[in-house]
Image (tube, rainbow, N blue to C red):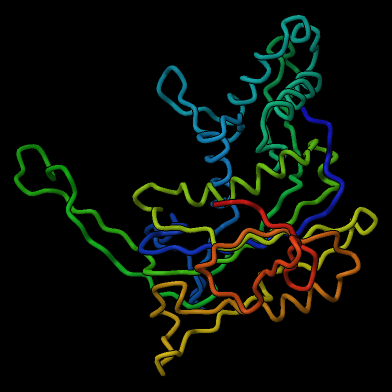
Length: 340
């Protein structure tokens, strides 16, 4: 495991959009897009964003992750305890034999998981650990690790209106039937969604989260969103990633919920302002960063730098600027992340 554990706290603001797809289905509501029924805003769980990150790291970057679906020889899916046993089995035989009780076994599993699994170093985990079979009087234990990286629930920056779609399936509805099945689903015609997160350097000491791990996180958020190309998720674009990194001596500083400083101004160039639910493209709006800029500048002396990635298709009220080879953004020295 890399020993360059992070020392700076960082706040994360991530904005992306989605067209004609379901950003996060609610299994308790016919898999409709998650909604706040009072405000009409779309909601996306932190679990969905973490899944995006995990899938990218595993499928595209070759990183090992703990939370993934693994089929057992009997065709069933591994449970958490089975997954923990995978890492116990990877421990050298001599060390396994020295584990006389479930606590010693737990410590070996924890060390192995933290060394190999970037998602646990990022997000933490609760891992059930089975007792040593020869110790019949023992109880099972668990590994509990608080993740240094946490996200609040994401939200659309405007009201949305899900649409019900019914289509023809590929197969017949039954043996000998002539009629094909029908598929039914709910999608959002368009949504501009924001997420807030934080990287906690204190919790990083427990999981060994390194600077390199955090760089992979930012890459996975951006490119993982681009690679959501299943039929229900295709049509999502990363548009803005802002990282507010604090100075080491101000490591406990933070603003909090940067997403709540955002507002979406709608385009009225043609003399008409579309209803929130009528938005269909990012150019129909302008992301207002005025309140965010004020909040950041109120703590400017504690901020080491701002880093950002920006798709210029997203109109911003405060655009990044470059002068003499140096970037500024939101009134602070900035560094551009070279994400495509």
